[in-house]
Length: 552
Image (cartoon, rainbow, N blue to C red; front, side):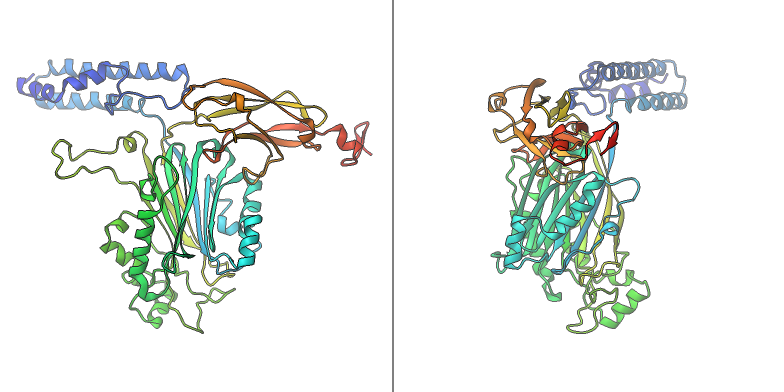
């Protein structure tokens, strides 16, 4: 083989490459020490990974040995190509699998109206593949003083209809925040609850110089399988002439809004941000007649160049980091109520895409131009090791809803990500037979250390429950069993008794959930289990007596 080719190949193969190849603790693809995000990973997985590493080392050693026998560079190139193809196929064995989750979002200015009787179409409940997360942002929910105070005591009517619709399908409300007329709701499929952690919410007022909450933003952030996600529901300043004020408001919100958490304190610190709501950007310059003829003729693209948000994105660098799907649906404002016709009387406001949904994936770290010690290809290690890819599947509006002068806007996304973990922090299970005729026992095992609290509790939920507070009964986690903050307590099992008087008399399917006060979420769920119908239920006349298999 040509000595020059061999020297070239060997010069590109560094000592560091050799160390990664030989050292089984190093990841050949990333050069970082391997870490196990799942403490319960099986030994079979480790064995498989070791075999794959050995095969990869054999392939590369085979490649180097064959180079010595090559008679020409062309022959070497072909052989290298074939061997490297085999080697790269083995590389896939090193990368943990990615998972796809479906997110459905809704934004709607409801103009103080009561909810419609049916929100099935709004939520697109029967879509395939099924949805994992629902995020609903509303603006101008009725917030008169009497109504607002009553909503603080009991759930508002909008929250009720969404919970009543989603709970029977296995979705639980995991977060909610309200500031006067702004309301943000987050629902998750029950199976995801233990992996939604560190939930925090906050708000920012921008109305009347920041003293009034009729305008502003409410937000919720949490960790979803270890990925930090933030949802920001906004209602910005109105009117055509206030485009610059709207930009100033969102910039102020992004810069000043903070969460009570140790990491990702601000909105843009999160790996994934969704910015949505009644952003109130209008279509400038075009006259009313041109707008309506373009809309009625299906020539929506003629209006994009004058959309204020699209125009501002070309000027403002921070807005350019946000992505948005094409506006291929009719402007969603302003309509006559209970109609799909734009309002003709009164102020004759021009139709506009005021209601929007945008998203931002945190950019990779780019080093300063003055930093000579860093390569220009430097990236955020976390983003490389645990990738997150966002694809928008749908961006549209629903013209069938007429309770407001705005039409709701919906967007569906596919989130492809690699999980940081897939083991609950706490394993919970019932012990033995449960009925109200006797005290019952439950077991819980802490599988990873976490910051617990004397206010942690384990709730008994009927299957189809609506939120973490929708329990039948609960028991406190005993203070003497709580771990110390820095104590490693993996696989410490505890048992708690539940008084029979607190157990439902009627039978049914139930589930146990460990609620962490610090994380504000359920971090451990049992499998569904049966509570037997109590003899006391018959004695108290709650159910008819069963004689010879027949109800009497």
